[in-house]
Length: 278
Image (tube, rainbow, N blue to C red):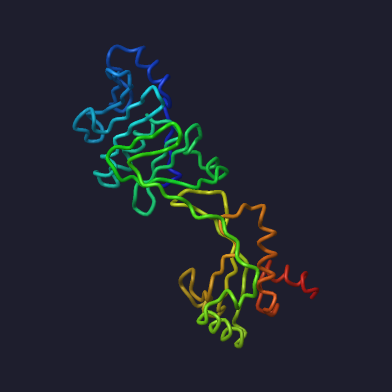
């Protein structure tokens, strides 16, 4: 289940769940073989003894407390095979608010949680620019209304960075500089300016990485992989908004100012020609 495979909430908050329960008798029967009960302390608990290989009311359960805390049993996600758990999480998310989203990245179960926001809406997530996600580790996950989480490892996104404005040769290691010089002597060097979508643990960020790519052109044409012929990829800006694209291009032009125009391509060449008055 990738980040984009989102299911949407049927309930979402304590008051609505309690209202639904009080409209039934003792045990409210929900969809997907899930039952809803009220605990002695007033907490509202969803559980299933049919779906998801649950063995008791504590297995595959979701408990809402009146203080806004939500307790989720995740043992079935960590225990069951990925294919089975992938189907099962869709049911789990129907009984959780849209601020909670489970997905798989790098073969691990991840959690995106942002109270009062929609963590399952990809378009919104792109505008939201998420900076943290969680990797599930414990059987019991507790979500607090202030956005804190227990039972999962917090992973923080790297900071936005911009490269130093210095000549290209000062950004390169000796081996890359030698490869560049060799390709340049044989007129095989091509340098491009490119942007790539910036993701974070499988989550869209709505941001971009801007880079300068140095290629050995003949090797690139003869290659079978996306990086065949790549000498070096230098990021001039990481996790940058699209409104910064002009600034990133100007920085790239400054970095390659000592490189002949004949080795530059596309936007980088055009911008360099304007800067140099060529």
